[in-house]
Amino acid sequence: MAKLNMNYACLRDSYLFHNIAQRISSYTAAHPEQKLLRMGIGDVTRPLPGAVVRALHEAVEDQAKQETFRGYCPECGLPFLREVIAAHYASRGVTVMQDEVFVSSGASDELGDLLDLFAQDSTVLIMEPAYPAYVDANVMAGHRIIHLAASAENEFLPMPGEECGADVIYICSPNNPTGAVFTRQQLKAWVDFANAHDSVILFDAAYEAFIRDDRFPHSIFEIEGAGTCAIEICSLSKTAGFTGTRLGYTVIPQTLERCGMNLNAMWVRNRTTKTNGVSYILQKGAAAVFTPEGQREIAENIAVYRENAAVLMRALDAAGVRYFGGRNAPYIWLACPGGMDGWSFFDLLLHEIQVVGTPGEGFGACGRGYFRLTAFADPEDTKEAAGRLEKLLCGMKE
Image (cartoon, rainbow, N blue to C red; front, side, top):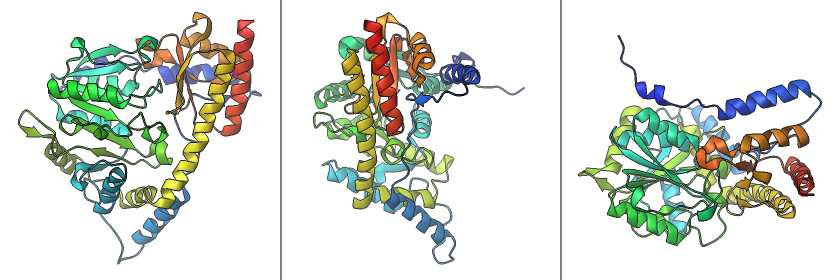
């Protein structure tokens, strides 16, 4: 009889998005004439930058010619892409070597695969509210999980303490779902803690492109000491619209060692054993992101999402609702009015103003009583949703 990974039996039902879909389906069946304004989706709506599209077309043409055809790519990434990513770090004053950059099929894939580096009896620290996949991937791996509560009292930016000792520490900044961002001083405290306890930080920087305040680092490697305790996972999904194109990159310093093992060398062996690399076409498209034209175009797209966030924040300000995020992140994390839980607020918005968001309970117990809105929707839909939201919330206070 086959022996299975029984850790899967320990997974909680992933009811969040299924439950949302069911409630939406029931509502639209009863009200087919109503247009829903979807402010809960974490997907982008702006198309790929023109520079990227042209590079993708060029790469397809390359594959059609004998002299430029490319077969298997290096498992860790093509040198030209690893080089431009390292140069991108250098432009921000961060030294990253080309062989410390690993090209991936996206941050979500990499966050799960990286757990191969750690023993089954590892303990991981996850700050909650959290991206649900952090928890589920570690349950599947059989790891013990410490849940570190984040709350309004600490502005959803918990700091290390005696209870935080773990082999692996997850940090997502800017955060999904709360939009909270760690300052340099706060990240320095986490880096010092990790080095003192021989922990490894998995730093999820998927939303770093939305940071515009110099108090907040785009990379954990801007922090002294991070080279001996951190792995950084990056994505082009929200930065450059690659949610349907799929490409990201991970930085593992050569200086990161634990238990007499070098994690960079371990990851080289992992990738060369378990993958055949990301396609040439996608890597050529990704390289265009880091050209001057690509950087200008992605800045234009991100400016649209930032304005969407500003529109939503102005509505919440007018209604006197407390919220977090939005200014340096594409997520707005608001306190549900009147002590409502997230699901009750979801139903209220759906039935009264046809606006869809995400209940905070879906991101862990610490999310109860909160609600996530995203800035990735169409600008006109965002303006309409903000107007309806402001009117509803102001009416609830009268």
